[in-house]
Length: 74
Ligand SMILES: [Zn+2]
Image (cartoon, rainbow, N blue to C red):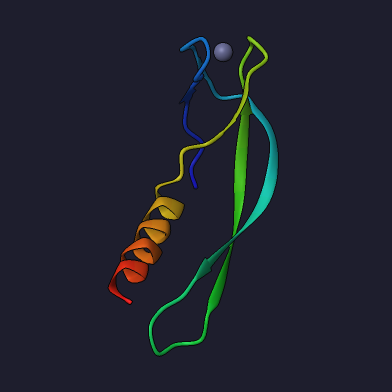
């Protein structure tokens, strides 16, 4: 994921200061295939106001939406 300015959810300022990284596992179940776990290095930002927040991640959103749709089908 490229570094990008992120807007603080508390004060609305933009920050590019990285706080730390967390490894997040995203489980991805695809039909008729064995489950795959995607490892994703989640970047967390810190704002000058002290608020820490995770980067926006369309990648995870997509898979969560996929699993939700899959749940509704079954
Ligand atoms: Zn802030």
